[in-house]
Length: 105
Image 1: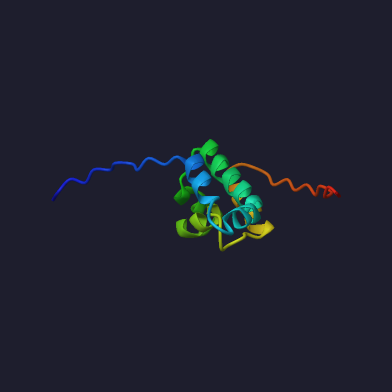
Image 2: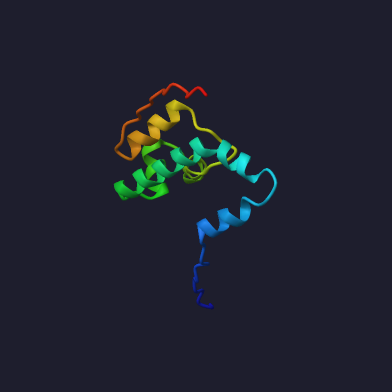
């Protein structure tokens, strides 16, 4: 059997964003997902701090690894507060929600 080697593809996210922002509609779409990106980053950081794999989190939540993967991704699926609470509990965290008045101009 041939041995497979993994060579990571370098990715410069800042350069990607700079180039992508030149495309029509990109900035609006990207900014509209800001809250989802923030939640996703916090979830990944919490799982990393807990030293858990997606499989381990799934086991603690009573779900599948693919479901955890979808929760941690940004895009089509926005998890409910109940699901976020289960995820937070699985990685040893609590959920805190703060409503902040909008700035008026």
